[in-house]
Length: 606
Image 1: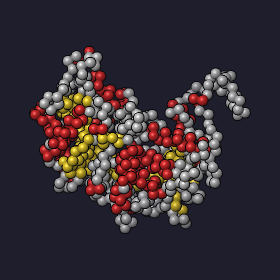
Image 2: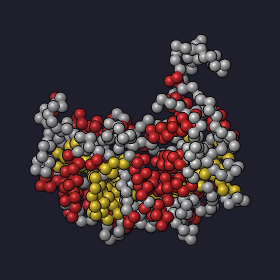
Image 3: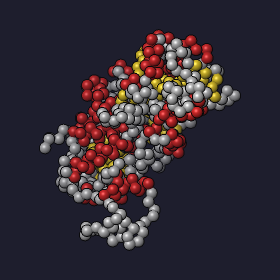
Image 4: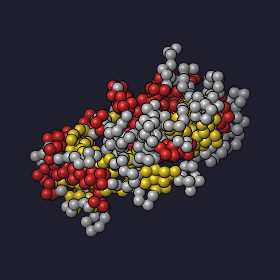
């Protein structure tokens, strides 16, 4: 991005004072050929004249100088900053709330606090293939202590299904009413660029997408527990109506910094307020004023305390479920009995398979006889598809869904780059080893998600008084009960059934990818439970579920406010009474936007 935020003390809002219109000088506006500035405040040593400048520039420092609050500005924030909203976290829910709030009132003064620093400029799948290596334990943090019975998975997903009202089990009427508004899903999908896989039409998601969808739809009855099938709704759409990039994995960084730049321009022309983002700030807890309806007046952070003497600043917890719950456990006595009594999420099954191409079902697909010497004129091209199957265990009534990604790769060595970039998410990203030797096959990567029973008393999150670190002083336990185990069995069978349906007449030649053992690689031997079950819980939810005050374990009221305080609001899956099996991103963003519509008045037009 070529523009800069304004990191000046003059831009930190004071009570009753407007923003200054003084601009920072951006590096792209400076020319090395003109080392002298006429400005009376010009530096005496600039641009390597009369001596070389500092040689210790780091990427983090360069990024911070243009986009994020610097040390001087942060000191001013601590000293006299006045904000309408302080957002904790900079993820999907933060973007959803902030974009909606500023659309309603461009003059709203907002500060975003991000625990980490700037990592990648885009979704790693939009970057060259080697960047897939960054998604490992070196880029994950675990701010809790697990019980000895628990695992937690690191996987996240970009699939964005829209759940029906019937799938939102236990949701209060206020949330059901909000999601029924026509604007709810429309704006959330617009924010995330959600596009059905059959509408991408970029020559990769094309013929195979249509064929896979038709086969599954026509044979859905052969998967007894399945209830529906549809082209996968994916957050991969065009960022602008005229963009020629038809498959673009949604990433928060670009839209958030674009919004920040827009607000900077509005501030310069006195038509709005800057959006401030501070990185490397860990929010630990907050204090409330018992004499004023328990409104928050102090936010404790790793870089000092933010004080709100007028007690009019909103604190928006836009983190994932466990960090938001930790902050509330560290802040409110009322949360000790309410928060964390319920913990839900999803279990995951992962099955890679392949079968030989049936020319009657998939005419025109097949390997290239030229192999690696092919120059691209053989007529065979990489094709992919993404399909979403929903289902339910008839005994437990628990939900599951299957994400099926199909890949036809006639030139594995050359196709792997596009296949990696256009995989629907990390969990279904095919490898070169899986594609090699599969040029006459359809490769399937099946990821199945089942909901974790939220009524399991052996799954919980609790304050850990033995840990003095306010970031990690919680214990988490997630164990599978009979309901979840029953669902897992039904879900696994449905996934294998779906693979058989797609193989058709080639069902006896289905092979599965084994990562270990004597059958490492492709083999007809069926995968075992230990090979297909990903340990742990993903998409953690329900730790602060919304419910009436009479429910002793409900965390927030119908206005998204935790019981026991005012002007604090919670977004994300923490407020979901049940997790469902559907990926939560779209729904979380919809409710974050709904929160903004509830608490941010529309500013009168100038």
